[in-house]
Image (cartoon, rainbow, N blue to C red; front, top):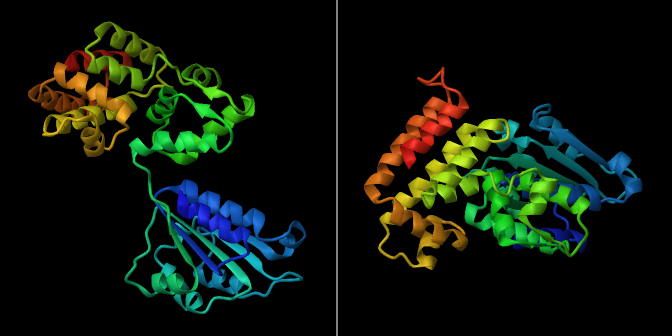
Length: 333
C-alpha cells in the first residue's frame, strides 16, 4: 500500500508526527506501522526510559494523556504506543484537548483496530491538523492474491497463481494470518524459490488436492467423483475442514453465480469487476453457469442456508459431519 510506504519513508527521513492514529478493519497494517515506529524512532539506548506500551483495556484516556505529557529523559523524544485502543471507544473523544495541543517531544501511537473515527467530531479534525490519520481498509478477496505476490516479491520469492489462490481460499482475507504462514515458508525456503501448491501442502499443511477451493471447482464442473473424494477427505479430517466453513464458502460461490446469471455483460473483465473476484476465477463461473441455471442456483442457495443451520446444530443434532457433507453434495448436484 502506497500510503504505508510513505509513512515509513517519512519516519526514516525524520519527518515524525506527534500523533499517529491508526484505525480500520485490517489489523495487519496497523500492527506493521506501530511495529516500525516501535523499532525505528528511538535508539536502543533510549528505549528503556523513553518508550512505553499501554493497552486500551487497562488504561484510561487520562492516563494516556498523563504519560504523553511527560518529557523524555536524555533523548529528543519519547514514544508511547497504545495497543487495542478500540476498548476506549466510549471515551476516545476525551483525547481531543491533547490532540489539539500535542506534546512536541512525544510520539503517540493509537492502534484503534476494527473501528472508525467520526470525521464530524473534534478529535478527528484535531488529529488531521496536528498528527496523522491512517485508515487500514480490508482488502477485497480478489485483491489478496496480488497482495501475496507483491509481498513475496519484495523478499525475493515468486508464487504460482494457483498457490496464491489456494492460500486465499483456505486462509481467507486476514492479512495477519496470511503473513504468519508466509513467514513460515520463508524460514524453510531459500530466496528466489517459486512457491507452489505442493510446497504449501508440505510446509503449511494445506492439501493441494483436498480443500474447499478444489471442492468448489469440482462442484462447479459437476464432477461428482472428485467432489465425493474431497468430502470423504473432509469427513476424515473434520478439525482441519470444518463443515460451517465449507458451507459458507459454497454459499458465497453460488450467491456470486446467481449474480453472474443476472449480468448482461459476461466478458471476463466485466465479470471480475462485478463479482469482485480474481480474473483467474472467471472461467469457473462460466463453467458453473452452464451446469446450473438460475432457477437451480436459487434452490441451491436456499439449501445451503438450511445446511448451515444444520451444521450449527439446528434440527440436526444426530447428524455427523460425514452425513452432513453427503447430504450437502446430494442437494447441490
